[in-house]
Image (cartoon, rainbow, N blue to C red; front, side):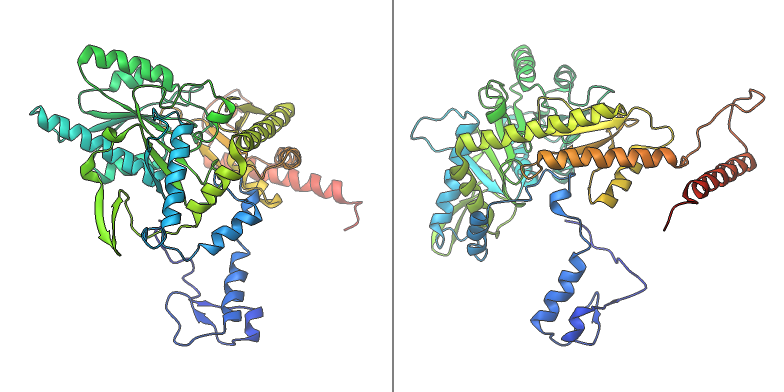
Length: 494
């Protein structure tokens, strides 16, 4: 949820051009209007404002799905008025969710017999899924500590500093200490060795990320499992692992089937994945799967007698739409293993096209890895005169939304740009993006630096310039720049 704030203090009314055919009076911006307006006017007013939003297909900052087949769109619209929590009234929708949980659990190699039912739940995204998994770890740890007569008031979780903000939210909301393994230049994921060193008797779990949001890299869950198993044996602890596979959970099974990161590793007790990322569903669906029933404490499950039936529920909310659950089931049966593999292979190939195009410019260092989430993270080799934030800003003029950001603690001096390759990002768009980035670089080369680079003066004196020296240098530079532009454009016809 974004905390609301007043966008404009100078104008508290909404004015519309085309809606004036239906209504002449302006509408209050922050209070409910006294009178009704025609439906056409309401539509036009909102539609006009939404035109200023970015194009979702060109939003290369987001991992979230921005395109689905028309047939799935129809299914979603047909179910948009179904409240998922009314399980007795909508039993088929509930059945579809259960099928999704079982399909995903087996995709993650959960140790299930042929007729055994998987343990998991659909959520509104990976944030809720992580909250639920974290609560399960905390409660199970507390129960064990109570039984042993030991203090249970200082739980902690070990993660890398590259974790998504939802882990920080869980730690703060549910009073769990977050112990972060710091990053370093050139190594932007959690170091399993350092992570295991930070584990103590109060650690409820170690969280590994399959697909860092920073550079798409998969953390080494296999090595983490082996090191942690060794420490558990030495100490008598039974510290488990949770895998945050929000981005990589629907990639690794299809592109890297031999990679051991899931329930094949004995210490992995739960996994979350975002259906609305590479599960290929619109925003609003995530999943959390537990290894077996013993890993989800029974006291966390509520049994509600609501609208005529006993409903077991383990969620942070109650009412929610059914459309995304139905859409997830559509994708799973529509694409099958073959279809998902084709989509992920295509995304990976397009990521390589973009990476190679950027490398050919000679201006960027590639920060992302070839194995991982199909994205390209890159930084300028020389950002003294112009930085990555300026590149991102100028790309907006071409319609591209490309984020620039600094790395977390101990690597915060590194700034990167990141392009996420989704199913709807074609090779043609990748090639077009490289061309537009090249144009931006050429334009920046012709512009003066926002921050002047410190240099020695004519007498060889190093150090900070005085304020008057800086002003004179900026003025001289701009005069020269403007004169050259005038000279170059003198014979051009406007």
